[in-house]
Length: 308
Image 1: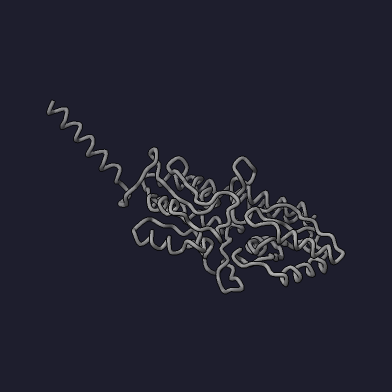
Image 2: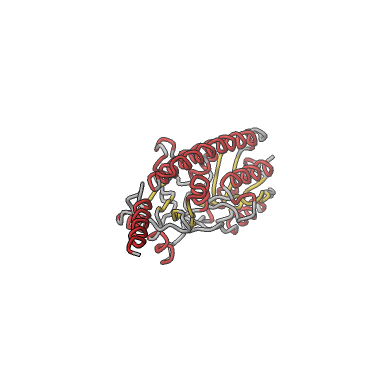
């Protein structure tokens, strides 16, 4: 009997020792997987792809949620405090959550900011002298963000380094193909028609990378409201350049774009609402846009088809 108890004790001690290998931080595995909390749908998708079966990913913001205005609930804070790793965008995208990230980081939680892996020279500066946070609209920059996620997962769990590296390398191939797809679709549109009018200024990275002039009713953050002067000025621009379509966004109320359309019509010019773009979140589950790759394809297809 004593011998059996001694053997059981050895097994338990060995199990405890193995569970700590490669990670000095306290972990809260769910069904044997590391518990990762991501802020936006784009980041959650990225972590799921690179983390694969080794991680359980919980996203704070669902489809259609505006991260600029998002306020974390007590439940969100609890999720992050109990996670093995928290991943966020940075560059003030999650504008109302900065202090929360700092507090969690101060408590020695592994907190990853994906924008930290992007060369500052490749970041766009807004009129407010802040960096534009919408980095995912340049597929090449999203590759840089993916590397940050891969490196963070390896820091958390170096026992699965090979898995994370393989998943990352396979995804890099898919992102290269996506980049070429976007360029091929844009090539279908004459250069003088490459003008994109949206609800807020989220597509500058898309514009600078793929050759579009971009204008938004609201600024980079939806926290800044569009005024009547903004509507009037943009309506004049649309009429002057004879732009055939403008676009609403899934995470921004469409009333401002509809007001812009009415202002254009008051100038005896017709502009169509060319469709819905996914700006600050992915699409709903079960749709083409439920993944990052699907979202980018959906956006460019909507833009090109409407402006042709």
